[in-house]
Amino acid sequence: MNTSALQAALQQLNLLASQSQGATSSVAGAGANGGFSGELQASLRRINQLQQTATQHANAFQVGSPDVALNDVMVDMQKAALGFQMGVQVRNRLVTAYKDVMAMQV
Image 1 (cartoon, rainbow, N blue to C red):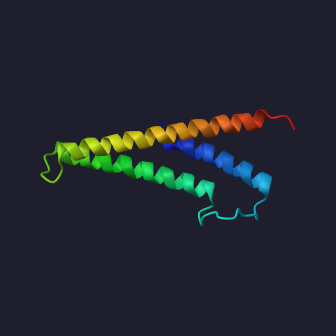
Image 2 (cartoon, one colour):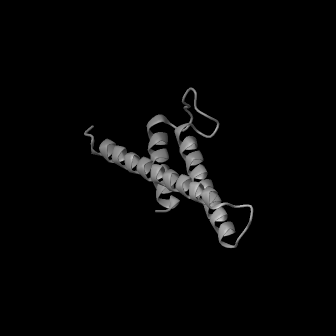
Image 3 (spheres, rainbow, N blue to C red):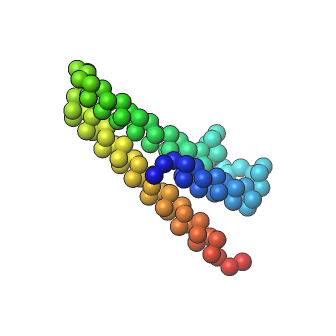
């Protein structure tokens, strides 16, 4: 699973949100990045960063770098795996919510 599917779902949700609220309205308490969509994008960036860090540490351990211990590599890999699983579950919930909204009768 790559982030492009999550990005596509996010774009669909943004389009629906802008259609329902209008492009100029803003939500109170929303961050500078656009509230929910900004938080979702930040989460995707954090997941990506966790995966990159885990990959870098694993590669450094494989080449025999003395600065990287096996336990650090394993912890980083588990963090990346959990972050990715969380991202997939959030995506699944968003798709289910989108389908439920689309199935509603007007």
